[in-house]
View 1 (tube, rainbow, N blue to C red):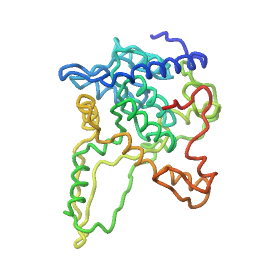
View 2: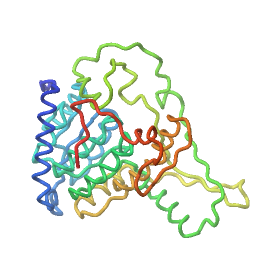
View 3: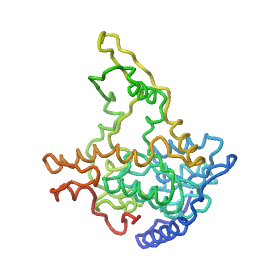
View 4: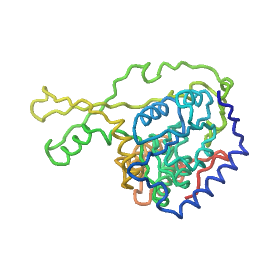
Length: 340
C-alpha cells in the first residue's frame, strides 16, 4: 500500500510554480527528450482510471517503452498500478511526476476538464505528450496547447486513434483520389446498448468522496460542487467507430463493409516513432484543436440560443460578447491555465 500524502492547495500552488520554472529552464535546450534508436522511452501516466489503465497496459507491451511513474487523485487507482508495476513511482499530484528527470513523455487520460493544464505544464517541463480527447475544455485551451507544443518543440498527439487506423487512412485516400466518385450522402451512427455507455447510471444523491480520493484536486479548475459518484469515473458518453460502409451511387442494395484493421496500438506507435524522429504525429495537437472547433462552437450556439458568427482566422465571435465569453472559462484558483 502506498502512503503518499494527500496534496493540499498550498502544495499545489508551490508545485505549479516549480513546474513552470522547470519548463522555462528546459525550453532553452531544444534537444531535450530526443532519444537514441536503442534507448527506451520512459513514460509517466497522468490519470490511470479506465482509459488510463488501458493505456498503461498497451504501452507496457512495447519493447522500447518503460513505465516509470503514474499520478491520479484516487489512491485506489494508484494502488492498482503499483501492484502491477512495483517499481513505478506513484503520486496523487501530477506536478511531482512532471518534476521527475527520468520521465521523457507523459500520457494524459484525466477527466475531460483536466486535459489542458497538465499538457501545457508537461510541454514546459520538456516532455512530449499523448493527451486524450477532447483536446481541451474550450477553444482557448486548445489554442494554448498548440502554442505550448510549438514554443517548447514538443510532440503532442491527441488520442483520436482513428487517424492511425489503416482502414480509415484508406477511406480518406480513396475519397481524395476520386476513387469513390462524387460523394453525395454521408451517414454516421453509433450502436451501443445503454449499459455500455453507462446510460443506466441512475440518480444517486450527493455524498462524501470515497476514502483516498483527493476530490478538490479531481475538480481542479471546475467550479466547487458536492461529490456525486455519477460525476466521476467514466460516466459520460463517447463514440466508438470500428469500421465503415460505403454505397455505390447505383446499386445501393449491395454496400461494402470494411471492418476495422486496428488503430489503438498503431496510434500509440505513431506517437512513439514521432518522438524519436521529432516529426509531427498523425493527430498533431493543431489538427486536434481544429477538429474540436465544430463541437465547441455548436455547444456555444446552443448555450446562447442563437446562431453565431465565427472568425476562424482570429478565433473570435465578433459582435457577440456573451458567446465570446464562452470561448474560455473561469478557473477555480489555484488551478489556473498556465501562460504560454
